[in-house]
Length: 347
Image (cartoon, rainbow, N blue to C red):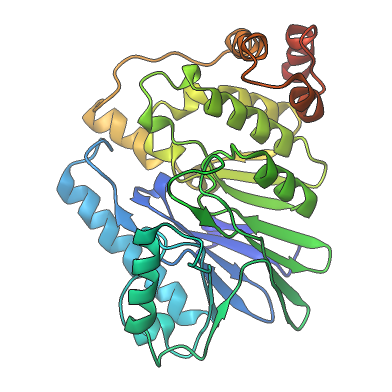
């Protein structure tokens, strides 16, 4: 276990951040340690694309480095969780060190897009005979001594009806402490996904943020604005002490400016917030790469100030893209109090 990459939820429940985009690879691999069991979720990595401001050989070297680390953690684990069938979230290969003798908790694939169904069936043939047990995990809970592992019903990989299909979120509990790993919720944007996370009341929340790297001007994207409101809502939950936001946004060197409202809220309410790298006391790889190699795709951007965020919310309300009742439930804001309420939240 790498102590600098560990987040504790109580003395007997710990999340080790193994391989994330803020480390320089595509992934969300997390290793959960309890006295009863060690669980690895999302056991995979992929190299970043050329949009990530590192030379190809460096990106490949990072992939090799973190692939080794993920495989090492898998070898030490009793259980493996595969939240969906994208190849940055699991290793599609026959490797006894990863899958041999393990309990494999799988996302069902009958409700997935055709490509993921094909990948899942091929994978099950590939590992046939290696695991101790293969379990379809959607919506189920399992007990290992005092450790309880719960899996959400399938939730959308992004917005409702999103093309990438669905994923399962993983909750690990011991006593009163809870860690939740969202996998690829891409925001979260979906209302039901956010409400489900809030209902679980995690101490530590490890979540996939909005894919801003796909947009030249993310602030014109209503789903991005919705994702910010949802993250603020989650940060303000009394149970949440730590929120790690990584994966998609950590591929975008503009993220500190685009996510400025989240950092401001976290500071004001004394919540630990940031990328996996920041939580580990290091600079996110995309920012170090920006300093050393310069921009790739996007060349101009500006911080999302409170005033700009207020204007975006007002425009979304006036256009009907955000429902007043939803914003009232999330942040206690109605159409007449956006500026005043945000001023109270941020100052």
